[in-house]
Image 1 (cartoon, one colour):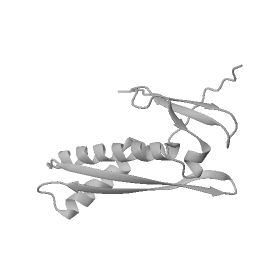
Image 2: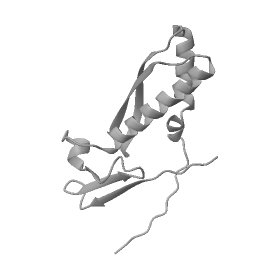
Image 3: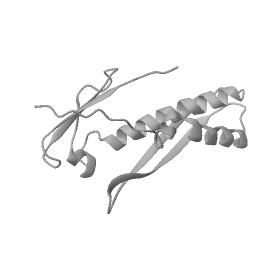
Length: 143
């Protein structure tokens, strides 16, 4: 099985004075703005790291629900936060780590069973695997 989803971004201008929009296939994001100031200077609005965090937290929560279900548990609630750390070094910017924090209500599960499922979800969720993924590119200069 293979499923393809897409996201789109448009950037106009230089790095610090430019601006961009990001959209998703579903329309949940429709030309949401992003900029240097939103990413690096604390201005309100979205940025790529925030979107990665949301994607990772949601994927992880679904994976955890699946693994708990396979173990015979039905979670009432799973709340996950993904803190994405962007750092700059001599080679430029990179995402150095993502810290997942999850809290769940799972009737009948003990801490050991929950921790086992949580660790399996961390290793198995598709977004966790993304950080070692092959990246392909189709680049065309227009205009």
